[in-house]
Amino acid sequence: MTELPDLVTGALAAGTLSALALGAGLLRSRRQRALQRAEIAELRDRLAGVQTAFVAEVEHLAVQRIPAVARQLTHPRVTVPGPAQPQFIGSPLGIALENVLTTLRSELTAQRTRVDAAAQAGMRGATREIQAALYRLQDALRALQQRYDEPELTQTLFMLDHENEQSLRRAQVTAVVCGAWVGLAREDSHLVEAVTGGQARLAGYHRVRVHNHLEAGTALVSHAVEPVAIIVAELVDNALRHSAPDTEVVVNLEHVHHGVCVTVDDAGVGMTPDEREHARRTVAGTDPVLLTDLGDPPRMGFAAIGRLTRQFDLGVDVSSPSPYGGVRAVLRIDSHLLSRIDPERQPPAAGAPRSTRPAPAPTRAPAPAPAHSYGSELDERAAAEVPGHQAVPDTGGLPRRRRRSSVAAANAQAAPAVPVAPAQSEWRPEQAAAALGALQSGTAAARAASVVDEKSAGPRPAVRDLDQKNHGNDYEGGAAR
Image (cartoon, rainbow, N blue to C red; front, side):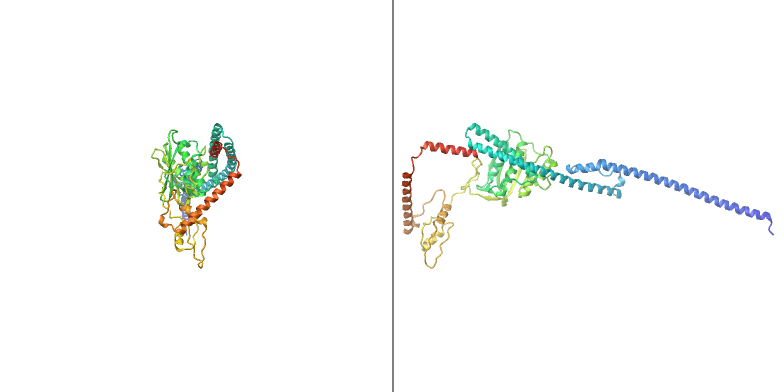
């Protein structure tokens, strides 16, 4: 039988062991809670740091990056800064912020384009009214020039007309920049007239020297006349504005392989590489034209050139320096925009510089055909030699009379400035008889008409009065031009 003290001792030992085990568990749990509290504190500190960094990054986005994106739309050289915190680069948060900037850039561009289009529409309507008023003023001034022949008054009217022409040019350029049409439709004209017409719209036109090296009769198709005049006026105006007032602007007109080039050289200050690059992009017409990009006051010359080059398939280059130290501007006109005008029938204006190319030597014309020919083989062969005349076919052995107008027109086109007498051996008796008969008939008709006129007409005016009248008409015509 177990004694009582042994039982008590065993119970005490077991309790002691249990207490020790329980104490050890309590110690472990306390240590774990302490570690957990430490981890929680560390996580809270890290979260607070991340939150602080995120707030700083958002502030950096709002203060630095978004304004830089807005400025970059108008100044491409502005650099947009990256994230302020390096740990955000490439992270989901950094990618989300970059998406914000991309969306903002797209929306700002769209809104800017919309606002600028509305501004252009409003300016286009206002410019149309100004142009109409200036055209009415131009018509009134020219009517006064034709009405009065006093030299001083005429000179004043010419000055006012020139000032009005300059205002009209600025209104026209503004309208072109805002998307309007050039406003004028002309017939085919000599290229040199379009160049001098653009020169006449400028204040410093007397400083411009035009050298015409084109073949006589080189012309522009109708829809290219006014655009070329506007482009030349803007290029020459830019050269005049950026060169000293005692220097000249040289304009050369030359043939090239694919058409014609109009070269404008000045002795001005030139352009920096950045300005030259910006001008090159502007005159090319590839970038959209926005009024906010043209400065204050707006510089619309190159912008108008860019619109016209894109619309009418012209080419302008301003990237080369001039041999005189300034800028060389080259307008290229391709062959499909060129035409031909007979300089004898429609010569260029009196003030236009004549071509430096020598005129081609006149060619000898073949012997003229008689007015009437009746079916012989030799006559048919002689008529076939006349330019623009077709041989008369045989119609069952019956002769056919040729039309005198077609033969006369062919002879007039083929005849040189100095007629060449045909060789005596080329004449046949029938031809000589026909020619003498026509001469006698024409002489008799002219004499009869002169006798009738002398009997029916009154006394003729004096020669001096006719000379004065003709002189007055010429003066009025010059004032009108």
